[in-house]
Image 1 (cartoon, one colour):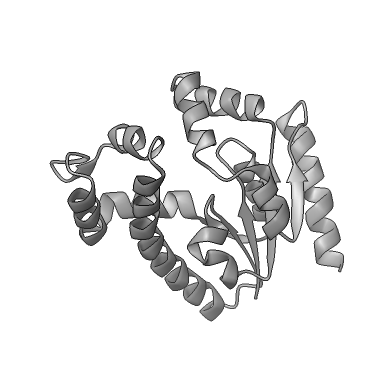
Image 2 (cartoon, rainbow, N blue to C red; image 1 turned 120 degrees about the vertical axis):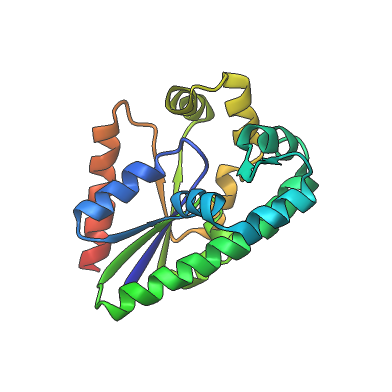
Length: 197
C-alpha cells in the first residue's frame, strides 16, 4: 500500500489535491474530518480540552470559535491544543490505515494541516506540501467559512510558513492558479508523474 501525505495551511488547496488523488483511485483520510468526528464522538478528547481550556466545551459541545480566539493568539495554548488533539487523530488514522491495508487498498491519501508535526507523516511514503499566497488563502477561507478576513489571517499566521513545507516535504504544489480546475490539472500532472516513477 502506498500512502501519500498532503499538508499545507488553511485555504492552500489541500482539499482539491485530495479530490484529484481520489479521482485517481486513492482511498482518502481527511484528518480535519477525523478531528470533527472526534469532536462529536470522543468524550475523552473533549474532557482533555475542557480541562485545559475552561469554557470551550459547553453542554458536551466544543465551541470552536471560542477555542480559536484563545489558540490563534497564544502559541503555548496552540501547542497544548495540538498535543491533545494529535494524539487522538493519530490513533484514528492508524485504525483507518490498518483497515485499508487489510482490505487490500493500494493507494491512500492522507490530508492534514499538521501532518508533519503530528507524526502522521511518518506513516506516509511521500509527503506533498500545498502552498499558496496568503491573500488567496484569506479569500478562500472567508468564502468557505463566512468568517471575517482578520480572523482568517490570524489563523494563517498561527500556522507554519511556506518555508517549513519546502524544507520538510518531498514535493511542493504551489497554488497560485486563477481557477480551481487549473490547480487540479497541476495536481494531476504531479501525481501522474509520481505513479510512473
